[in-house]
Image (cartoon, rainbow, N blue to C red):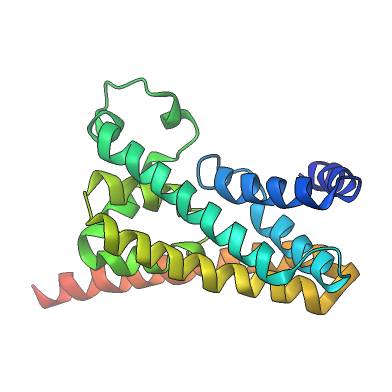
Length: 205
């Protein structure tokens, strides 16, 4: 992954400004469809380029936010149209090869319990963004509130990433380590939360 990021950065650095904006929008869109794409780290790189004056911070924020929402809603649409096949154990949909179905089932439980709050926090829940989008589609959450929640989530998260890249400048790639730590903490906190709820429900009965 580090080699991929290094190659991507080298390629980005050699492109025109228009091409760079287009690339960032494609990355922000695609990471909602193909989770392994390290979109967060490259958005932080965009903050670094903005600090150098190569990019406009407001433009990079705007295009990555819009593209993130479009990517989220594309996955939402897939979930709405193909969700039943996704949860069918006999289904051979290709996406089941790249999604941990245990995580998907967890996302479904979150959606049933918290609804739009899950969409609102989706950018902050490491490793579950595409799953949440698919689950929202499968659950047929109202489209307009889902777009608004996804927009707010993307705007806040991308602002943080760009701001981070702006502040640390040439050390922007250090955000990768912080994001890995953050992701581990999120997973642990979520696991503890559901474990606590389970234990509490058993003790209450």
